[in-house]
Image 1: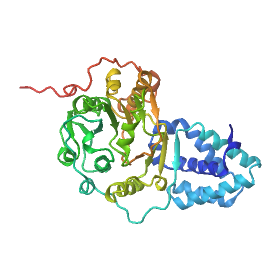
Image 2: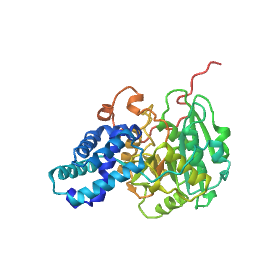
Image 3: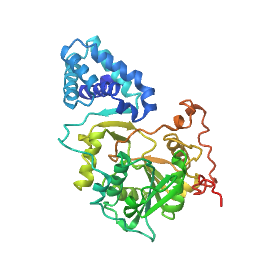
Image 4: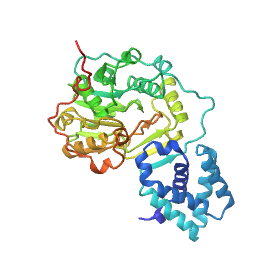
Length: 404
């Protein structure tokens, strides 16, 4: 299959995606590794757009390069490129553009969605404002179908991260599945507990996992499963910035009724929202009480086939593979790949097509940067060697030694 089998409108949209990616630090930072691996392809598309013999296209491309969040400019540029691909598709310069667009589309794991016009005057709701309309947790003590484990750390004042967790808890307490049939577990990993008073009423278990050092994502999740999720049959590991819709838990539980199902990602691609669209999504889902956000209207970058963000699996499979590899001692990324590969090996990982979104926050360090090893660690890390019988989630593992 080549670019000649593609609709001109789809090629034009992909071309503008490359132009925006090449100019937008937000989009590049959503997944720095993904950007590094595909940036040459996206930049080649951008150069090809700028080489077209159409002054209107070149002017709009320059406008997008200066302001990649200019939605009207992106939409008009898309329309002009689609028209050119339809009417002048056999011209060498246009053919070359189409070839480069197809090359980027078939090699990149990033894809921009420019969205539609933004509502005027939307501000960033604070955590307390969001939780004011949230339902409290059920405080479930008996048997449940599932447990949702959320790892969390925020050492500063209220921020996008605290807003995001408030929105996630608001959404998890507004589900179509019976609230007494699932448990929500928040694990705060830090040198001291900071946020239990704010979030405690909205989760069934608020676990403090003491670790004053770098954030160990794997250990934090393992602690949540061992000390908060068990003995639930199903476990969901949900990052603290994934805003779910009202049917999120119910769909997952139903999927496990199919014989042989052991694990799945509920999504194919996650839309990482920019700051303004994150405000819009939280307003729609939480403050307005909608069952789902209008994802097609939001601006962000798709991470194609992300290994993290949200994964569901049977607790028995989690235990059988020894949970997450706690040798990923700092930062983000890496651990999700390793866990998914082992879960797929032992249980099989399915993918579904839920329309999931990631709320914006300041970028945390990738695991290889946080550990000072550099991106070469992807080639040298001993992947899939975490022992299944490892002791995991030990709450004393990072606790400082205190003198009597």
